Image: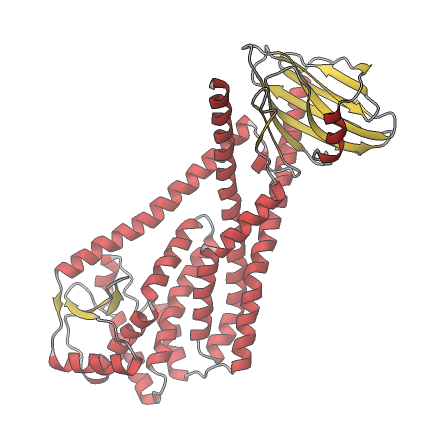
Length: 499
């Protein structure tokens, strides 16, 4: 039972590292995909909002956020898991609890190297700290600010305001119960509330078109549930805090959110009404000091004068809706772009990860080899067992890149690791290391006729290149000689087929 517990702990440790590394690769992949999407949308943005309504681009951005937060992550996980193909299992359950883990591809993800594990763990901790500090800081800061505003607010029950409010609700087809408040802390209106939406106004009085414009603008936000998507955008930004491109996307997303609301408010407005609406924005910019001090996104006027200027230009020139075929084509392009970019980014990140891993492993192998003694090759012959014959067909093939090995030996029975069909002149390089220098084991290759070449470990390690002198199918195997603790030998390392 104790052997089983030890093996189970080892498996959990490996699986935890695997999951941690998987998260890092998925983050890099989805971050790269998000960057591609933003760059593509940026190239189209000027053309869209200068000629057509910005609402279409804003809706595509919302769809992209939802995709990147879940489907893109699932797609990246499936792609990476398929490439690594980890095998976790128990061998010879009737005699012992031998455990072997390997994969067909090489990558940082599956190299069980102490230095790499520490580096990956530190990377994960740094990312997690950045994510939590950014997301929680912004969330807590706004919650505290909203609490102060709610405490200092009074419900706005002015008769004219309520009449206008009810009229706009009917116009927009809103049936939810939305409360409006006044607060002296703010200088421009904003809407908030995930489950119970509310609209906050400055304590100054609004009349006529000003009241209509501001109320309708915030009610549009409530109807579209923009608060929810603003929160999701903040979450996406926090997840990819290390990527400045996502920061630019976040700014553009909030900007296009306001522009699309402007378009709905002014859908049937003439140039005079557009002028009054733009003038209202200018007046609020001059009073924006209070909102900046509160550090809350009040939305209606944006965050800086440059954004407000772009909005006013967009407001004054007016826009037209894109033709239905053009809108469908644009949506189809984005529908293809999102998964395609995710797949391409995942493959690129995984290939880069594998190249880094091979380089690190090769350099580590050179350093280790300089300190290892010369190993003596022995030859022999032993009739193949039925299991050996079956293993020629079912074992994983040795890849030309590094194939990582992680195996526990608890009995003196040979454990077959990998197989390959090799030709004369090929070679198989093994680099294996046990957890204890006092462990002793042998590693070798055997062909389909039972001919063997093998070496014995020294100081718990075995590093050797077996030369192939005839065409045949071969199996790489290991065998326990003596365990330092008298129970098991845990071996890890890599095997390379040099064709």
